[in-house]
Length: 386
Image (tube, rainbow, N blue to C red; front, side):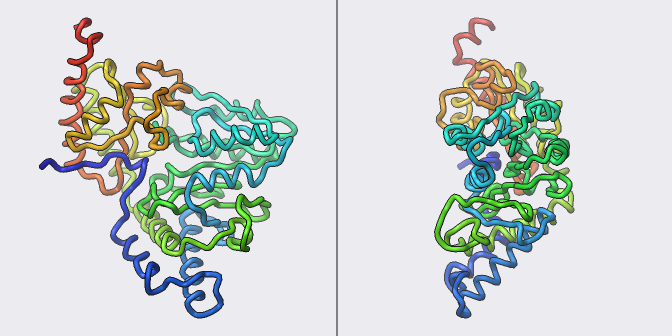
């Protein structure tokens, strides 16, 4: 039986043992409702507030500015709907995750004006395009910190400065940056920032929205006064504890050289595969990227077929965003980068985690060229040309 190798960390990451041990007691012994006044509830409240401090330290903000949610999608939606009203203008980009793109489209139906800006060939927005798109009624700019498909890092600090100068709110989806890049909301200059636990070795179903002090946020849910009346609903106690622990571990990993280790593994894999395969390359290589991600294209190959072929050999990778799996259309991100549809469909995302090893990379370097070669042999167009 072959060893299975996971290289789809941008879709989700496994729980770290330390994270699981931190959350384990809150399933049974420490199960209280954090809104209850008795000792069970107060112990639960203490655990939630400790996690709030851990996440605040990770993002360099005040604990009171942390709102716990069910994940990145809810955080993004809460940000976009929470600070805009009919008649407001919103600026975003064509490469956002669907949690922002589809929310922005819904904003249009709800009476907001939305501008979707393009990007360059490396998938990076020009901050000056944002400046030029500003209107008197612009209320919010929403630009992701790093792209989930290509790993390209956006110039969020420059965008934050433009937003500040214009007196406009700035939201950034940092779901694919958390745990891979240092995040300092003061340096970024953002008013709202979203992260998701399961992208950084916490459980699925946990997330955070940073909301800068004095920003009034209209809630999506109505009920109790949880999260300072910003997110009604009994807290996911075990998940919040886990997210706090994961944030603490991620902060330590960033200090201890984990990004550099991942970048070295990623670069070795990327260069070796491209050199071995031929008629292949990587997207967004001229842009700064998060250290764990590469998006490779293999001409004359259907990406979906290659994902399946590699999975049968024990290597798990992705055709792009996990949230768009099964879609027949080429990636909206690569399309926005003006990548031809055929090449976009021949592109795969390899995303490492802090658990990835040199042995994993060696296996991928061996498996991918073999799988590509076999699929090309089955392609009538490739066979005719060769």
